[in-house]
Image (cartoon, rainbow, N blue to C red; front, side):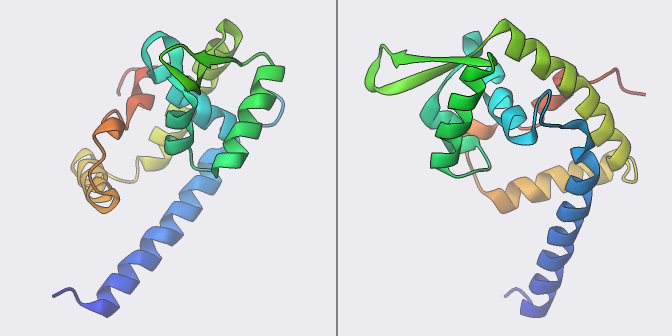
Length: 160
């Protein structure tokens, strides 16, 4: 049986670490180029084949609420970052596609963000990073559609 006090201490430490790290790596985002929520949407969309994802998948993977995602995508359409169209395979669904401008903006931010993340995470060695990745995946539970977590590395500079 899990020690309740240790579980609470571990959770608090994880929560505080996440808050501190997120605050430090958020410097790569701004409202002029790409904010963090827009980056999150484009991360999901650009990972998908043809840089097109179903809106319900974007909503499921986003770290904001469903109504917020719908409004966010509408604002991204107005900014020319994505397009929306009906899903021909699902009359009730909507497809979201990254525009050339949106994909380019995402790649530029993603490259810098990968560097920022790597620099912040450099306090851990490779074994610790692998252990952290595995432990947080275990906490999240199985989700085969999220197997590509870590794809941000596609946009980073070569390893040192």
